[in-house]
Length: 299
Image 1: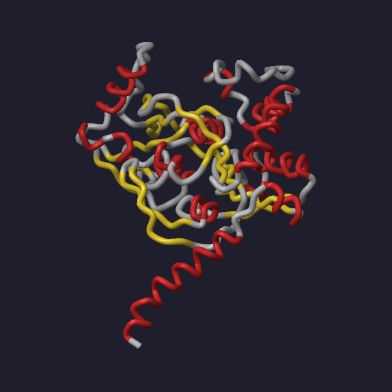
Image 2 (image 1 turned 90 degrees about the vertical axis):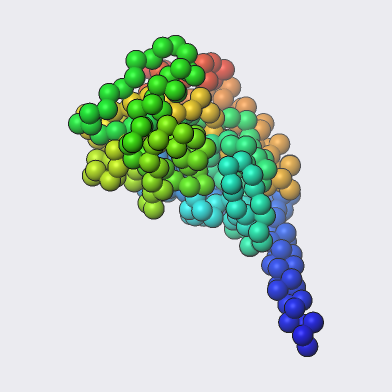
């Protein structure tokens, strides 16, 4: 009896893992079952209110291409990767430690998912779909002033970080805005792990919850439009990064199908039109990223 109770936790873990693997579908399974499940976190204009946004439209078109029904599965940043992979984990810097398993709830992640080294240990990415970078923001009435760009990104990052001496800075653990990724304590910054969502960072700064906040390009562009004249960009905290669509490592055929679909979408101008619809200013900030995407009228 004692041995039974000792083995029970391991048995339950194996059963849960088996259920998770059983739901790990690749292209043929998705086409047979007739539905593509899109895991999305409401964020900026990638997954916006009422289930619309750049990545929602992208996944709807992909499902249509595959000849299956589109299904949106809302999740959050804490669980999104686990709900794709079936794996529970912890992250320390860029080190990932598996801690257990859970049921799989979706087939693909698309919500402005930044490509980070630790995430690549858990899932595979599509080709980059959107440029990004981590910026430092403050309320427009802050005494902190934006740096003067030098043309050298390394110098600009150092100068931006120097603004944080003895200043509070908001970030969110487990995302590209995690303060520990940027060694901010080395400049005597005072990181605060924000309990809200990425979409709530800019309004939190306007409400005086901290001196500054980390924010990525997509959300910063939305904030500048949503709160004109109330938010200012102080400078970069990271080099340019990229976002992509996330796939299980056990779904290689689905990845291949998306790769061809995405290339076709870029070539015929559909993707550029989608980007312009949701992020019209991004072409001015990152023209080199979109150099192989045919421009749309008015761009």
